[in-house]
Length: 223
Length: 400
Image (cartoon, rainbow over all chains, first blue to last red; front, side):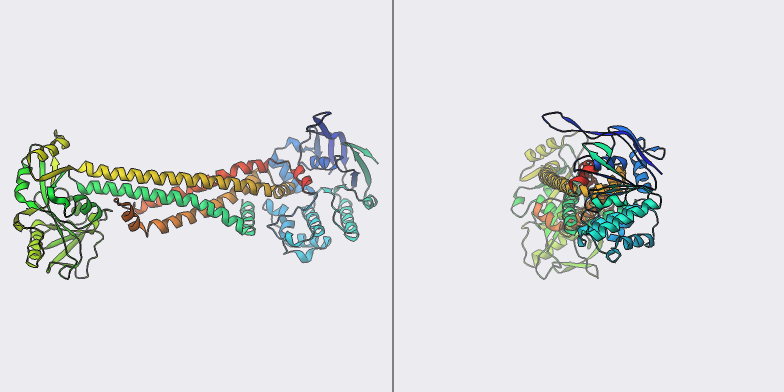
């Protein structure tokens, strides 16, 4: 299933000598095709994460719309959009995003537990094995390293076998070996039919991507 | 809903110190409102009970009564006392205009010596004319109180053989009265001939309570004023025309207690309000601090697919668990203080004190817990609204 952004932009207000209004993302048309891994690179503050959050249904665009298949995400109410994100869009956010009161295994199961869906240990454990932290299943997040927490977030995003996978700097804090392992995993998801977006600074990510886009001052362009 | 409940419980368990602090703060709410209301209600109940038991419009006692106790101290605090006048005063009083019913009473203090089972106030009444004690006795005992029979207050311990000895004479306990929360609970009641017999026995054993003829002694006269007569007017008339006695309106005895009760209730009310303001303010600050600490957690839940409603339910569940557990602990603590130490409260306040019945207490408990849970939940609601409306993207970027 394709994820499309049609004429999306995001405006913010801030105190400035030049203008009180600035656009984190300028009007952009963008498609994330199924079965492809798209990489967006660019400097910090260029608008990459803002675009990713709009695509994820977490941040309403100032203009334009975001379509998953034929469904306009922002035409849905919050509960419907949240459910749709839970079922079809896997998001790997920046930073440490584990819930501290849950074990590693419970954190991975979270998307299913949230809506009362039955989930055995089999699928989450296989994901933990793929990201190399199966032995930590009963540990709590405060016992994990930064890299292990990133891998936990990846396993959690993959639990529902999402049609769209949006990864925001998924390899930060990872060593070379783990960086390649995660990039291989994202490539594999694309090969299995998911539309994958990878926002990253990592140069080696390009070799796993089907296309690389560059973002600068809120404008997206082919590199 | 199960998810919200499970996650709330796990969140609370993972932060035991924070949870305990919030539970204790919430406990203050129900402790103060349940404990405070229970004490105030017990005082009101005590006053009503005292008013009902007094039964008379006017009480007449001899002028010198204050030297060996007063009607207030005998009836209210249960301090044994005695004072006497000749029966002729009863005849003079009962014929005054406006006196519809007059009935004599007789107060005798039993001794703490070996001649008596217990040191208590013994109150004698005339079954022919009494209108204040017998209606109350009939609530617990349907028979007549014959010679040698005793009715005892609720605080008197009845021996297994149901006999009490006063001045070496043995008497049968035929009934025990319901609790009134006043000094009447520690008194023993008998008819006039029984109590005069006790007085005669006491004199033989060397106790000199009354120098006159015991057969003609009375302690007080209870008066019911007829319709169309002012109670104050009748009391004044007796004070003016019958020498060596003092007629007091029962209302004035009640109003001095009511005044004390109002003062105590006001102090308790102010304390409860202060505790509530402090506890709610601290709870509100605590919830705001906690919500600031948890913005990241909520952003993560949004990313994974939680709706705003789900997050609100999660916070509401947490605050209900905290305030619910706190409210129950607070109410239990209040019960542990108020119930076992009721006697101490009564003595220290020097006011009639009667705990409400189980139904009223249960309703008060339920109301206090519900109010505390509601207040605790509302306190967290403001910070919850702010937390839910946060920009998820911004929070995730800030913490990256």
